[in-house]
Image (cartoon, rainbow, N blue to C red; front, side, top):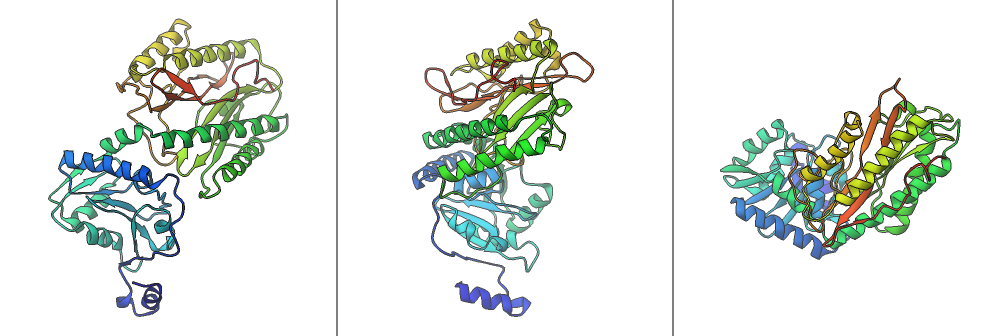
Amino acid sequence: MTNQDTETSRRGHHEERPTYYRFHNGEKAPLPFPASEYADRLDGLRRAMAAAGVDVAVLTSMHNVAYYSGFLYCSFGRPYACIVTDEDCITVSAGIDAGQPWRRSIGDNITYTDWGRDNFWRAVHHVVGSHRTVGIEEDHLTLAQRGRLVAFLDPARTVDLSEATMRQRMRKSPAEIALIRAGAAVADIGGHAIRDAIRPGVREIDVAMAGRDAMETEIAARFPDAEYRDTWVWFQSGINTDGAHNPVTARELRRGDILSLNTFPMISGYYTALERTLFLGECDDASLRIWEANVATHEYGISLLRPGASCAEVTQKLNDFLAERDLLKYRTFGYGHSFGILSHYYGRESGLELREDIETVLEPGMVISMEPMLTIPEGEPGAGGYREHDILVITEEGAEDITGFPYGPEHNIV
């Protein structure tokens, strides 16, 4: 359908409006990675599909659609998909996005319209057909959408591909590592902007905006052909430091406050992070003892991240380290996690987390954080949340720490 045909259909009677169409508007835009990178990813997926007896994959999550096609969608209540066959990679997107999904994806794109409910599934059926073995993401497809998939595609059977795709995403290519390395450098820049903005009477939100603005400016300079979205900062103070994911508030900083600096540059869907404990003006003895203990845990943890070590093994050693100091009771979550296409609202490579129940063995090409945190409740000496966070690339020989911002009392009493 041409652009003119599309416009005519939209102005006509309801029955003349298209259910789906192709709106390939403009030229293909530069993607975060070269075409060969996406070809390698799709080859890996097709091998997994063949091993599982899958005819066609219908991927619906933001992270997998972006990983295999290059297109990072904005759902806003609408479904999206990346359909992978033996030969094709086709994104299915909503009309509200016009030609952007085609420009920002490696393959074909079909636009579905709002004129009829479930036009998305009619477009998917146009590509997939009926009575086939369909690969899906069971950890993302809701019960309601799975019901629609069954109703429209009538598959011979469905196969969960979420584990296979996650395992593929856990091992980063050199191009991915280069992008993550750039993200870590941007996070450091945000950290320095935040440190410079800290002073008594300034609000958390003001400090956070300084860090975010510095990072977005740097991302645009480093990646002039990219789309810019989702970069954020969590800057917390006082009791607001007790949780790692506490939102920013308008609380004003006071001398003696414990502070938590958390910068999160987002580059083409890829997440990186810098997290540091700071104190404003002074740090009391009780707080200093906890802070130094957490720094020691952080440094010990970094020394454990080596190829051949399992996530559970690293976790147990860190648990023992804290237990010897009677601090394990203050740990509230795992010691680190994988990096890649993820953010605070999509993606999670749960098979690569430093937790007791994860037996994954570290391999060269994996990227993982070391981020121990101790939370001391209000009313106890040293109350607050203490967290340091570095990003490490697992290499053949060991691990490379790509975070540069300094940590510890020598550097971060502001």
